[in-house]
Amino acid sequence: MREYLLTIALAATFCFLITPFIKDLAMKSGAFMQLRSRDVHTSVTPRWGGLSMWLAMCLTFLVVNHLPLVGKSFGRETTGIFLAGTFIMVLGALDDIYDLDSVTKFAGQALAGGILLLHGVQILWLPINGIYTLPANIGQLLTIFFVMVVINAVNFVDGLDGLATGIVAICAGAFFGFSYLLAVVNGFNRAGAPSLITAVVIGICLGFLPHNYHPARIFMGDSGAMFLGLLLSAAAITLTGQVDANAITNQRSGSTLLPLLLPFTVLAIPLLDLGMAIVRRVRAGRSPFAADSEHLHHRLLVMGNSHRRTTAILYSWTAMFAIPTVVAAFEPLWVAVLVGIAIFGFSVWLLKDSWENRHSSPKKVQLMSSG
Image (tube, rainbow, N blue to C red; front, side, top):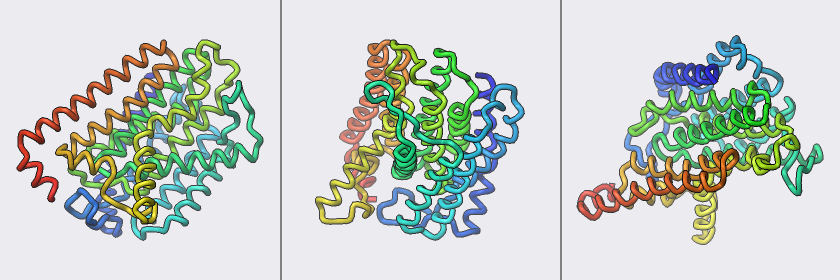
């Protein structure tokens, strides 16, 4: 565990120190976001946060490769994740400048999934009526689909300063805890790509967040959102490949589903928001891909929540799905339920406090909403 904590600390430090230089480079290169009517920020802000994350990951890999335990995590799968992550980051960096069309980005995401397949990162089985081994072609298609869904879910939630960064950090933290505890409890190898990748993701998110939290001085952009989404999806897939599902005890048999379920439970809020947006736009006779200002974070802002409180509420909702899911894999269900209730109670307190503040100062809220 100490080596993984060191990995997190290194990734966070590198990302924090590199980001200011990338911020200046992004402005000089034209990788910045102009103001739009649906945006909540009020000044031109550079993108390319993904570039600083990628550089931090590279430097972290160079150091931890020499550690006794974590160094054993480097192999064919980790190489594939690095190459696919590099490709998707470059694609996102180009999109941050030139605003590539959706077809090009979808094709690039599928190609990144193909790079993972070439290096053995593939969904091999599903817990259906026991353990069902997937045919190779079905597993390959499912792998690419899974990668694209997670990438776009992360990209979709990137709507407020620090929102996607924090949500991904919570997701990676929950996934790291699950993968590490699964190895400890069931006697699996603690050195593996899932734990290494999620530890790096936690670190780069923590290092980037001070620059990205409201008011943000730099955005992660598509370069960061797609990069983080790919790392999360790849970590989930590699865990299914390393785990012998039949070796897991019957008492914890439900945990065989978690490697693929956890990313969706953690990203439940953005996925729900995405589904609601598609239905809303189609019913209004618009394209399901047409942007609007009616997402969950917009509605929370209109309710009178500050930018930071809205982010905290969405953090708590994410944790409410993620943490109990992991707890349920190792503890009795009632413990997971209590954890979920406690987190839910905290989110309710945040909403209640903002509601009371709104009604106690209606003039201030009206001014905020009109801005």
